[in-house]
Image (cartoon, rainbow, N blue to C red; front, side, top):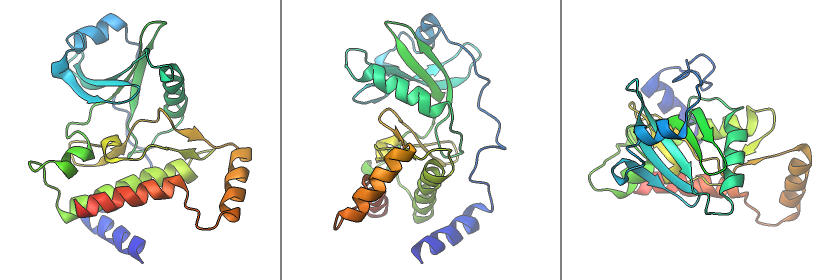
Length: 229
């Protein structure tokens, strides 16, 4: 019943729009970037352009030579898992496309530097809106963000050839564009489920009393925070 109400509110607020991104043009044509080009675009990865920091690296705002604004996620190669995280994120993002998932424009990789060039989200992360007194979300914006996240997860779980589990669903990984449309980001610890993985997960679920899958817990917690903050 709650899901039906949310969907009705979504259509009333936004009109009928496809949840798939197949008919929406890409932000930019795939292109290669050199380290020097990204260095110039971020003013040598200046602290003034730092817009986010996580366990595996930092994200910077960058302005390319043609004036286009992008986000550059630089992986901290001093962290042992950063190499694997970069490979995982590249593998995941190259095959998925949905209006509520962050778009990867390109990458830059060598032995000493690894980065992803991403679509820039002007309104930043959901975390800023939930924990800052200067940023306020009304009830319709909150409901729309919840459904945006649900649409992204539905695509990852059921709209892909093999289910993808995000594994790190939290407010800082939900980014907001110009129109306050939510985009799920950061697939550095995501998992692609094979047939064997799905079978094991299903068996564990049936055999465990009171079991709740991590994905269900994460989205329940995220929705709880969106509604009460």
